[in-house]
Amino acid sequence: MSRETTVGALEFAAALALTRVFSEATSLPGEYVTYGMQRFTVVIVSFLLTAAVYIPLYFLTCNIPSGIFSPDRRGKALHGFTTAFFGVFLLAGAADTGLRAHYYASSTVFDSAPSWYFYIFIGAALTFAVASGFGAVSRTALLVAAALVMLFVLMTAALAGEIKPDRLYPALIDDAQTFPQEVIREFSLNGELLIFAALYGRVRGGKRVIPLYLGISCAMILAMTLLYNTVFGYLTSKLDYPFYTLSSVSDITLLHRINGIDVMIWVMAAAVKLALFTFAVRALVRSHLRNAAAVNIITAGFALAALGLSWAFTKRPELFAPIKALCETGLPLVIAALLPLADALPAILRKKRSERI
Image (cartoon, rainbow, N blue to C red; front, side):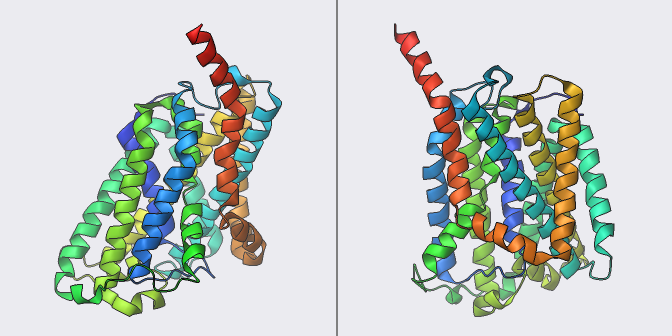
């Protein structure tokens, strides 16, 4: 279904960070983010929590060079359950990605287009991305991430006169009641690390991926939050899409339609994220099946199911509400981090003991 290749740690980390910032910049009905100084604390604490939860998975993954879901680990019951759980979690993440991308695009510049137009477009983009291969998708993600950074720099320069540093005030937490809930919600958005666990065997220097991912993602979200707060102040929480609003009010002579570029970046990020989910699922399936044709059919079925669920959730948002509520507890992400540990740790310990003998 795609050509086999490996990618560098930096480009893979940039791809994952791009997909994480995509979740930050797009939102769904009913999502509420409190901006202000508390937002900085929420982001920092959520990434520290993510690092703490994923440290075991990080060391575990680095001790299995071929990846947690490698073909040599077929036939184990717990491994099968872990694979199934990962697959369901990735399907929910892929459906969430398509839904976010559609809702964002239809709420900004494509408000009059039928929803099936969008899903045909994103489906075509996903097909092309998967057919191009893992390496091509990762390199494209790196270019899109670079374009996002450049866009952010241009917007910052254009809005320099609107930045009011006095809107920042020395407070770590504005609302103690909402603080824990917001931290857990931010933590739950780091499901990209499961893609890393599934595809680690195809990343050169993979040990650097999680530190790079955490650092790049956290820095980008903090920079975006800083610009929101200093430009919009208390009005930020009243905006559905602060980043889109920033791009809309930026007066850059060279790019009069910079808000359209903003939407293009996030739609491309959605296609990249869906492709990475698809590659991860293919790695899961390969750890259980030797038949290449069957692997390709199941992988294609996953992509179709993700787009189909996204379209269904677009028509019936109430169907997605309980799934979203469950994911935002952070519990599925914690389970997904601990299951591989329970699955592979005994084998690693046996290997360590045999090496000492």
